[in-house]
Image 1: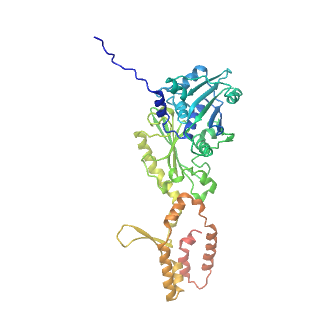
Image 2 (image 1 turned 90 degrees about the vertical axis):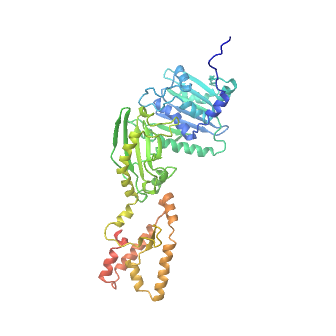
Image 3 (image 1 turned 60 degrees about the vertical axis):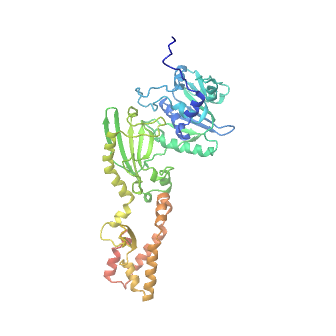
Length: 468
């Protein structure tokens, strides 16, 4: 009797597997950043990116890192070349040994890597997904150096380094290529801003099509911001340092600076935690369920720095674009927020709070409605000294017209428009000229000798004068 084998060899259909493998969800700029992680880990100080649209889309990333030997290149091109649980060098930004391949395959069908070490030899390997699908096996090709003579020449002029070349880019056929390049510039300037600014005296230079990528520090460097105290927490796998920042109110900075630090998503969507792993920004603009994104907290950004030894605890994914703090750290972060968020709210609502201090007479009152809806409404204070002075000078018919005007102002106050403008473009609201003109009016009223001392004293209690 013939005994059946207790196992079956079922290799994947590589053509179908690769099609699924490519749909991992990388954004163009995130994929580029993943490639640069390898350059940083290779101790590069200069990275030059060339993005070409014609005659066909092509991306070349050349760094001056330590390069790879022939054997090291083969391992680097192998899928899952690293064990994510292995101990790595302190400044290693990788984890799974998949970033180079998966990030590249998500955008292109042909990946070529040329590399040079200090011994002068240049080695190269290529993954061609079309060839893999045809042969249904993982065969890496030796690239034709003549075809890549420009990249070869650039690399040969370096003491050591690596060229990563994307061809047959097919993920952005229906979008504006220049817009994608602008996204890459902005993304890299933010994600690698600490490296660009310099770490321990060493700066990283990144350029795209010979345009230098500028650092985008999300914490608004300079005297305008508030940097609160550091909160260091020590754990078995490493040290976590939490540093809260309160960004300046838009009234206290230039319009250019305010818009720059809003980031592309705007202040409302970029409040919250900014997680750095080995000085590389991983995720940002998220409260992880510990707070809610509100207008009052939009100036609060909290930096968290972790080492690469804590990747598994923080559930950092393959794309390094999502993370989640472990339970014990969530409790610490809650304590930090109890102190930080009230400070952030005071900065944003500072002008309102200052007006509420002292014995002030307001032009607007916040009063409950009479229909038992538990809602409030804004009403013009009929007892305001300016209103009373005007009423004294009005005839009976004038009082009717004045009251109609006040009711109309209350009824048609454009609250939604004001809120929308403050959220999207607060610096575009400029009342400085009107404020100067109004101040002149106020001074002329105080100089009016027909006013009694009591009337002048009441006027001086109003917010108009208190804000002078």
